Length: 395
Image 1 (cartoon, rainbow, N blue to C red):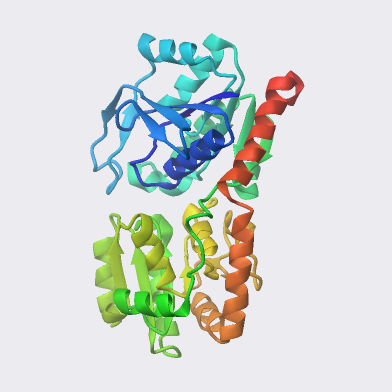
Image 2 (cartoon, rainbow, N blue to C red; image 1 turned 90 degrees about the vertical axis):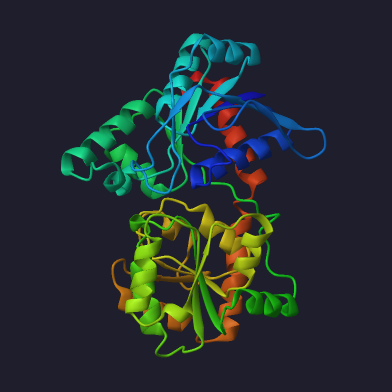
């Protein structure tokens, strides 16, 4: 099968959508399918995979947005594809087109569907209304417009997928009429694995300076992630766990504010800001910790949590949006009500109350994460592609 994937973001950019698009392309290629990526990032290139398998990245003409629009991110916005991009798409002869963003690259995918008369699948990843503050549109009319625009776009698709039931239901509630399918995000569960020995974990704890009870957050350091509430909860939990540490992996516009908050709370020496980490350094940072935490109420299906789960970390999180799809209370972690730092603190203390319970929840995290392996999710996506291509009634 020939699959053309369109996205406004792709590695080397670091964000959830970019990672999902890349992991899906990896897995589809490994399954023997021909994949072409159309995106704004980088230059035209062939991405090497296992053995001699490759997928090709085609750069869409774009322009850069000021960093003030979305602090901490270098955003590029696609232009509608010109004759050269359309010619490249025609030469590829896709059996199906898959769009991961509803912006101009996404509209390029709609153009490709119309011109080539091939089916289009659209994946929606994000509750956009949680990010409107970044673009100065956090008003009722802005949220209304955001949903109207999003649904208008995805109603152009023959089928729509969402990683979580919460986001899928929200799309339908706001007027989506295209068929909706829940297909989770993929994660590299072959790379993110539990630490192999207690001695290695001990060495990494010493290297990173993590404590006896070590919790970690990984992701964008921004207001919508509610890291300030996680810090407040950690501060409360420290009263019962004086040897605990809290590592924050990632970067973003809220970092200086959070560093100041940690000092105000008197816990600055207990907080470890690593900045952005990648590859083995990122995995080692996860291995140096004992549990993952997030207070974010804006999550759909965060890859960061799945990667932490794949490393065998139990999760302390809030019961909001797509989180309950992947964090099962009292199975692989604990869920607290959103916006309640005191109750989140109680969950932190409870997760560390029994080494045996911590171990069992960590094992459950790994087992749950395995169902989100790149190949498993790619096979689910291929089954949808085949059904749509085979039967227009499936669209």
